[in-house]
Length: 610
Picture 1 (cartoon, rainbow, N blue to C red):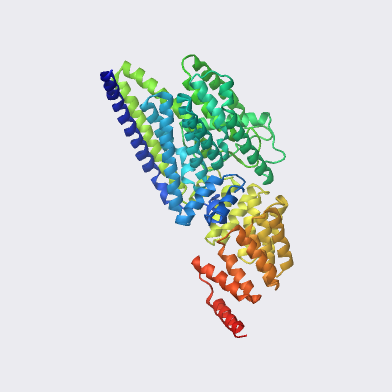
Picture 2: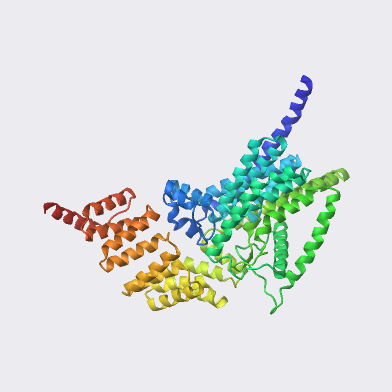
């Protein structure tokens, strides 16, 4: 018996070394491939709202954390993602390299988890190496890794994959702690990105793969997972209804089936041939009222492919497992329900679903390699050379794609080079020009966006901001008003129109607009600050103090609100309170206007003499 144990140990040792070497190769190659992303900046596509201008991440406090877990951000419930941004802001402020580094580290962790998961499925370190390496370096991964906003993808995936692995350990050893760990990781995954709610159905798929009998016990153990999924699905629907992303006219119909089939064909094609990638893919243009031919042909292709996949069940469960994993996990983004938006697909949607396809690719390569090697050693070697060549090509394509995400200008230019009729791209590039104060080019891009889509709300709003910046206030008010006609619940448009009214001296109208903005969004700290400033201009300093205080209750390190409240206290002759706010500003490293300090010092001294 002792001899047998030693022999078993000697057999396991080379396998362990192969696995360690495989993981090392995956990490090194993936890291080098994504290295250019660490030099990238923030983009104006959601990075601004989630990080750069997000006051919720500015203070890492229990009150702020509670707010993160009870609020939505950019129409999504992603508290764990927002918390991760807050931790980074606490240590690195707005250094984009820190955020990009975190994304890459999380992606590397996911690569290791994919390797472990595929090994649990195949028991083969070479299959696991191929699948995990392609997962790591595939050009479709760039959007999820190089875009700071898509922290959602890489973060939810850590918990999603961890939950599956914990479940498989539970299945193997019937250790209830692994079951509860799997459930806990699933909850965390949903808190990072709502699309994680597909996990319970993925777990059923793993039961099928490992030939577990479908019985009452198997169903009961999924009930908590299904309950969590239903809760987060309800939260997502509620938020999207409130923010009007899920429109009243949203529906499921025959057209949606054609669109979903097109989406499947699109993702399959881009996985195998990742060329002509873009941050946005508009709907293919049809002929009048007819759907584009590709939509009509896609269901036929999917039907034929489905027949072949089902037929493979006679020989192996692996192909139907990998294909079903892909289908289940990508189902929520296949446009089966019509929602607002002009993009039909997105690279980031393939992050987790691609694991199923890459598993099929890896086992298929192993099968062909073993067959070829038996036939002729040279043919087997040739297949290895092809595999290495594809890895090199994918790595180069990914490195180049990382550079597309360098900044807003490079990103939107790339979209417009490939799809010249995308209003979002003109709007994004217009915002870039606005930020660098090239107002003529900004207006030109916003105009172009409105030529493509005359009801494009964001272009009216952003062009209004440009007109306000160059002093054309009537045009600014007109654009903000047009935006509000398209969306009467557009709080930012009310706020910015209020600012413009204030610049032309119509303070009562400005206050009315700030008040409307706050009715729509009670956590809009900037609107409280702006209304407080307007009250101050009208001499209503007590009301001004009240609004600045409300702004600070929402955003505790909002320096402008502290400064403005200090001035309001000065006019109210409450000098001690004014000094308290000044001292607080000093702790934030904010330089207070010396002229105001002199006035406050003199007034305090005069008051003391009295």
